[in-house]
Image 1 (cartoon, rainbow, N blue to C red):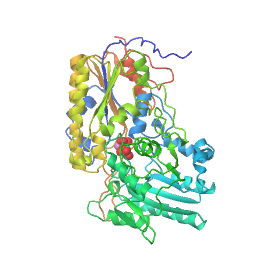
Image 2 (cartoon, helix red, strand yellow):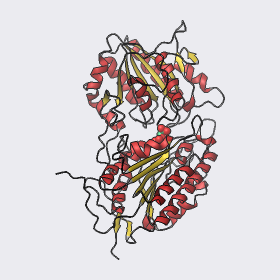
Image 3 (cartoon, rainbow, N blue to C red):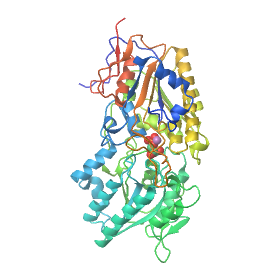
Image 4 (cartoon, rainbow, N blue to C red):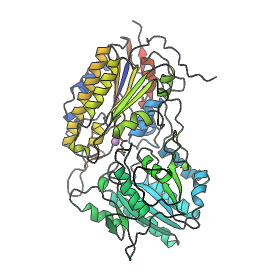
Length: 556
Ligand code: 3PG
Ligand code: CO
């Protein structure tokens, strides 16, 4: 029968504290001026790389290695931390939605049948990120859903768009809106009343995460549900073009707008009897809106008017909260994560990051599940992030504070594992596209690693330093030859998004058995191989169905 008890590792001892440090957005790439990790002074990470070659290696952090549909898909924090924590590769939301749309199963499930009840007398509202980034949502999935829903009786459809510029190039919003407008006009030719109703930039409207700033969600609620926003336009294309022309405007931060008819009335507020689908498959930046849409006793902001709707998520976003209760596609069933195993085998765990990445080392790490497995053995610490700023203005973020908490946890002697200490700098500042600030960010992350490694040294522990995906190591769009791709006016195009690059895994520390080295016989190691490795370092064998460990132990 099934047992939570992990077998003893034949060679590795128990009782050494293990610190797992995740540098967010820290990949390995060629050294040039657009590689901020290379440009920055990063002596600690450099010494890991140039130290013992048998204790540093690169692993895949993108594409099929982390459960994404194809190897053209860049990595991201959700799938990266899922893989790190779960030790296995699960078909992720992007892929599950693709499959459900291709097979048509999406239209047969409870979720679709539930919202369909509103098609006769109500409007179908689709709310989500409009791009082909494939991190939170994908345009082609939205297109298929529009087609499928209209073929199955949706007569009135309103799309509430969030412009991207973070998982895709800044400025690409205009093209995505054109494509969507074109699709909607084709639906109108078929007699379906389909239109974009509202919009805004994803980082300013709706897509906050981990309750960092509820105002972001409120701005979206006002535009999407109430039909109220400071900017009113006759079309979304006009809206995006006009708002982008403002000084310093960018896709991520466009202000909220609503589309109005000739009489100035919003064309698509959410009303009693309507259906709403949040089209993002990724959870972190949809959970807050899902709560506002679903919870009767919601009190994070004044919703003013709470329409009686049928609401479904593209996926269920939180497995513990069962939120939302209705969804079109079942999420990956990520169970028996390493965190749960370790706790059940007596390992006391500490996890920490600042707000904007806190759920990465708890929620994503534990398989998209909020809360503790065993409160007596775990402590999760969240350092409040600065809110209402773009992180290029404060690129050191809370790296120092996070590292100090991790240090204190190690020195306290209370924890066997300090895991997923997420250092957000390379990623959060990398997403701003500000190269100078990203260099400062990388240096700050490196200094934070030093604080943690010094503590590991003091307690005789073991470290595992890794990353969840690339970002800061490449800040420019490249052509096929790997050279910066130039735009029409001959300028470089800043890459705000993640990359396809591999990430490092470094192990060491005074507690590491001297015979431990990386194996050479794993064809394409990826992030999912890290969990078994960490279990070994605690003196356990990993469960048989986990991706194989990265290490072997020489007899000496
Ligand atoms: C975001 O949500 O900030 C980006 O789309 C992806 O970044 P992350 O995967 O590093 O969180
Ligand atoms: Co990121």
